[in-house]
Figure (cartoon, rainbow, N blue to C red):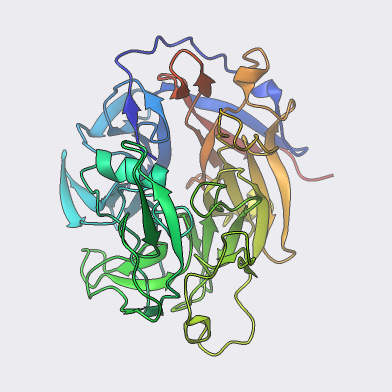
Length: 458
């Protein structure tokens, strides 16, 4: 979705109330950095100093603030590492002493106070962007690349964002060779009301005929809904796996690359209801179902506008009899975001994943209601394949909806620091404002929380 800028939104202030947050017995939470502008991620430099990305809010309105990376000095002061960036920061990561940034449309590395571009031209001007960065034991860099469209066909929302970005002919790009069914949808241009037939993997107003075979991306180019892999210097860019919708969060161990994939929404022209956010143990070279499968289940329902877009499922599945299934399922529209694996036995839950849930942004016009869930950090037992609350407001609502009680608002990342603590990046207050007619994020309300273990389990 597109970022809109408000000239000013007067900060209301935000109470810090860790007592409003429920944790398992033996853990405590504290706010270690407050008054941040739309923080999205954290990392640590070679000296163990906390780095914080201040970005903006891309799904609605935000007051203009500097997009930058801050360093928390040993005395608690904040200094700018790199600033004046012109695109939202979706993630930061440090590898071999270098600071990497996932900015919308590109991957860069910080060289002093400047950004050196490693990868550009990513298809990030529709509904989704490139997301988290992870480094594997093989020394390569991995990052998620979201889709241009909600469900494989450019609709009114996507067309609007693409036009604003100067990319009116933008569309999804397959991660492997695909054969199209020729499925077509009547899509209205929100600017003019003009209606044109539109098909999969094509710009608005174009339909590729049934049987059209599209190749995968050219060498060095990205695909939509894919995990991309490259050398640390950005060379040898290739598709590692694809068939995701919005692979926003990544984490890897010595055996698996885990991917948080956000489920589709009931948006025209191919609305999908009740699609959950999921966690994949991604399969190298594999197709994971988008745009024809939802959480591993076929989407096709005759007469419901959900015909298959791809005709070569068998080829894409590589001869596998069963379609891929997610490793874990979260709630519907909980906004599952960035995650980390616990590698600190003293913290407890070693090897399990901790996932930030941003919470839903329901259609304020009532086209779809706000589902329960989100506004929390959950613990995913990867062996038992269960999901449990770990840090959640006692009210089960964002703090701003319960009298500014001071708890969590919009967790967007969970990451373990070198000290073994779990750091939760909370973007801040995001609420629907009737006077603006859109979702609005309030500056200076972002927080980095830290969870530590204080006692052994009873």
